[in-house]
Length: 243
Figure 1 (cartoon, rainbow, N blue to C red):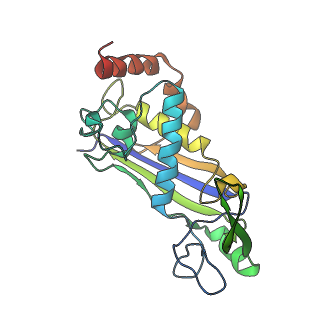
Figure 2: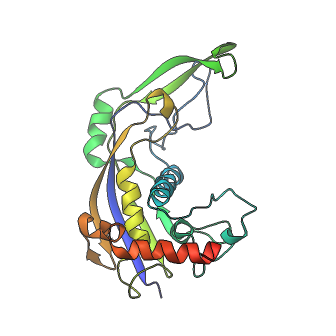
């Protein structure tokens, strides 16, 4: 039986041109944006989950929780199931030892935005050149073109189906979901070329539903500022370092 059911309905609204690469190119464009079967750009669920995990890791580090990279192979503590792990991010997203129970669906154009997509062009290209990191000059014969999407209005759902989370009583609103909502609120960029001012976004949370009940955003974030968070940090450090 699953004790923690979470569904978060959100909208993602890009405020600057953005690019999520497909890994493909053509004669006149080197870097094409990923598109669906109707040739409309979309946001893959894997990309959304990746940037959301990074945002949650940053928030966890800020409030004093220990984080281990999912790509770090030599950290034995990360090879632990969700029942016993002391890393709150691994409990939420999964680890190298155990797959995650958090699911991010791909974000597609919402019905309200589909008409606008066909009424005007949203896709442009920009020519750039690669920079030599050592010399800080343009590389010879490295001119390329990137496809960017302007605007958009995307809808998706983030779902959690967990058995072992941190709450006062089993089935109560857990610390991990509070951290997830905090990380979601802090998301402000997506895609590539973020250092060039691309990919800025705004997140709108339409509904938070936990175990069949609607939860307000204010109530969902409460564990991040309560005493329980400091107690969790102390317990985690005791298990990690014995202090």
